[in-house]
Image (cartoon, rainbow, N blue to C red; front, side, top):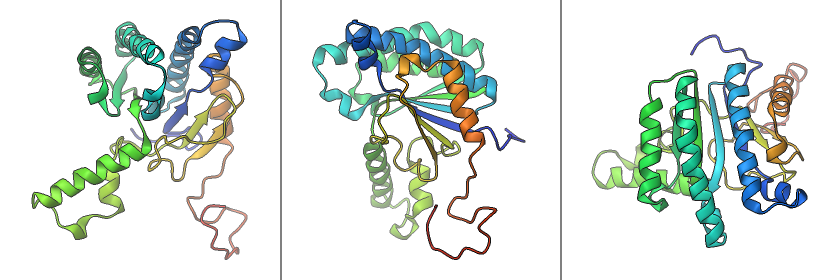
Length: 251
């Protein structure tokens, strides 16, 4: 893609937090919060695609989420299956390519097959790439990449001296995409919670108290507008700091 407006993030990453609290506030069981959150996913996808965002990465299920009660994990997996079945055709019609990242080996065979089918269906689309991080953790991602490089060294495919930041960056998830420009977390917490630890090095961080099921198209647009007003320096100097000699990495 060419001539991307600098005011629009090429890649947006979102932690969709607050489904359980939303359900509690509305006197509903937790699974109703997750179902309500599915509508916010649709609105975020549509809003980002309309705005010209090239990639959207959503943190759907973390490595740590496997520790939740078995009944809730089972419900989340079934919801994931239903959403995949329901939304794959919609994504395809709208030119969205789907990509699922994470440790898929922990999924059931049925869910693994559904993920592969949805990816196959949408693989030629290029309007926007939607990445679903499921059974994913940033530490797992880096460890998995390091293991892959170590195996290549052991097999004689590369030398130890060839392992540097660039090599590791090519081995982590989403390596073919621009790194996230904008990170959004709903629900009020202000941490990145083991999400895209490698990829978020220079990302603009946007935190909002709005719970995920209430994060509609207008809220997504507010986040994109906030990003457009940021000055990104990547460790360099801003326009008003040309004589500043401090060694602050990204202040």
